[in-house]
Image (tube, rainbow over all chains, first blue to last red; front, side, top):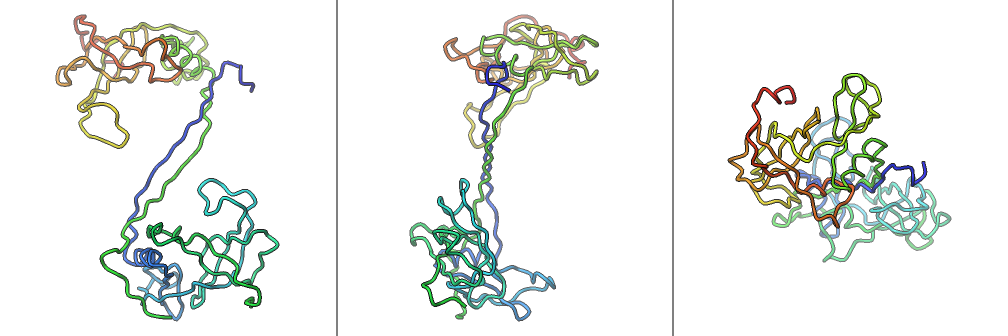
Length: 154
Length: 169
């Protein structure tokens, strides 16, 4: 339809600001991020990251919190050519599952690699935290992951 | 790995997760006619060719008969409060002083009530059957949206008996 067909059109923005209770375990994870640490939880011989209150397979209570990372290995990734509003980075980046050192499950986050050519499965990356004053107890306290220097690849 | 000590005082208990949706709304032919009328300071409805009911705002079809409503009808600037709600609860983004009245106004000539504010009368004096008229923004501020209708205010006419609008509740 053309714009002069008598039909009116207008932008319409819906925004909801949900405030969610995170509970004791995710709360500890978020608190850890604020302190510049990444926490997982021990469960059935695994280390689950981000930590959960219940074992993802058995549903049993999980155990102690442990610190993991900040380095890890990319296990799978997808390149984002045109980042959307509110995505972690405003230039092309990769969404990746990062198996942090000491963890047995991958953490989904952004990798700032510059170009898709610099991405590979098995590459080593490390977390880049925001400045302490900018941290809010949120997954965004990790700004992104960045490739470790060459020679660290597994 | 080291067993972390999580500080009690600064523990994170909540996070804010905003949801932001960008739409481009297309009003359609009937609502566009209505909104264009609003920008001219008048209420335009449409009549069902089968049951003769007048809908405002028009949606382009009759919900009872399922036929297109092409016959345009200009409604009066006056109407009757059929039912209303006294709003006493503050909420985010509120711009009107509490308490205020949100009412269903049956415009003269319409067969469906129209929602609007009722002002220039104390909240505890608003009643079903009250005669009201629309107060519009300054002509220079008229726009194709409902902010153009500032509110409805009493006309001073006698109340309308309940029986005359009971079928519109």
